[in-house]
Length: 173
Image 1 (spheres, one colour):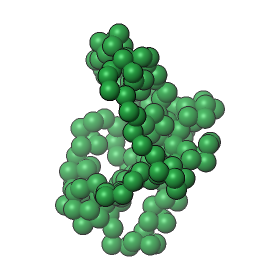
Image 2 (spheres, rainbow, N blue to C red):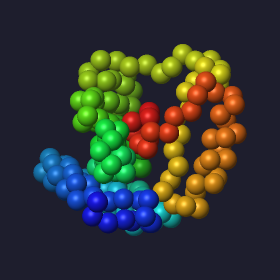
Image 3 (spheres, rainbow, N blue to C red):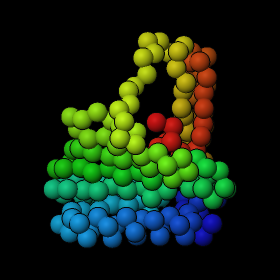
Image 4 (cartoon, helix red, strand yellow):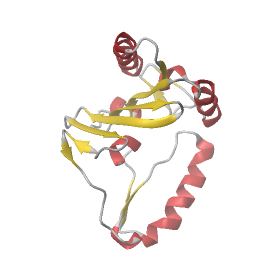
């Protein structure tokens, strides 16, 4: 762990910055006119994230990257983190990928196309009621967000099959 961002629970490693730098170099070499927004260049907090997106919302093409979704897991040696990349055209998300390096799984989706896992189609659950679903939830590292997040989870928990908190939104998809 190199440092913390918003507090002791919001970790940042050298690898976060290195991964983002590699991804940005690849994107810029292939698409030099595209805009790029990486998580590691944005100050902590929802307001800063919203402002960063607003600033680039008029971009013809915008790549949005979280180089390590699940940094705390990664820093703790837990194999539950992923690379998450989305691309928007004129403010509308048109494609995205999530890569889990621990399982070598690449989820890819593009507007008008079937979502795939390593090239094979995947489909959403056929569950028809809350009692048939696994609730994948998370708690942001901001201490003020913990209580509201847990209240929401507790309100839903009695109505779902089970609850899982894995520490990576991308992995829980």
